[in-house]
Image (cartoon, rainbow, N blue to C red):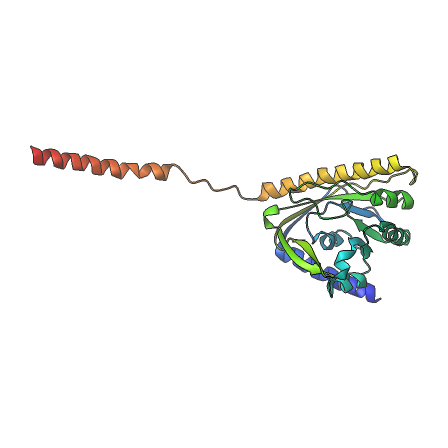
Length: 255
């Protein structure tokens, strides 16, 4: 009961932030299928997990690096919402918990990159947890491509658990989501080649959707204002007149 109350209170605040501070754009290639799904997205900013919760009408659980769970108050809030910490070197524990939740009917959010995307706008190579979870549970994977204005990203350094940590924050500006069609995968979870192939396939789709989101943002941005050349040319006209008057007066005085 506490988890649901805390989650929906947070979800309300996220919605308020998204609709007041962001120019939110969401395009659906297809509606979400009924039942639990795995939402998989690229990860350009720290706010992405919160924004993705808005895509599902039901409560969702996010797999998040355990570093954020160590932030005072914020980390406790993540736990109260039922999100799952992912500890480096022990990702299997997080996947096991996610699998139990999915089998119980919960939608989960995973970022295949495992961390914030590179600052140059590309994406990291995907980890295999997404593919293994999809094969173990049989639920559809819904790829999501996130696009935003990189000029609006603010990198803020903080200290978490006594160590420096960087937050890639996006407080305002255009934020576009392109939600792809759900795909269900089959195969042996112990087949490493199959797992890798699924991971790359999903990541390639995410990159394509991300490109569409980025294009929508760029198309909506105003074109740069070019300084017209005519006003500069007009400056030459009075100078020409002054020169003619000067030459006329000079000729009169000499004559």
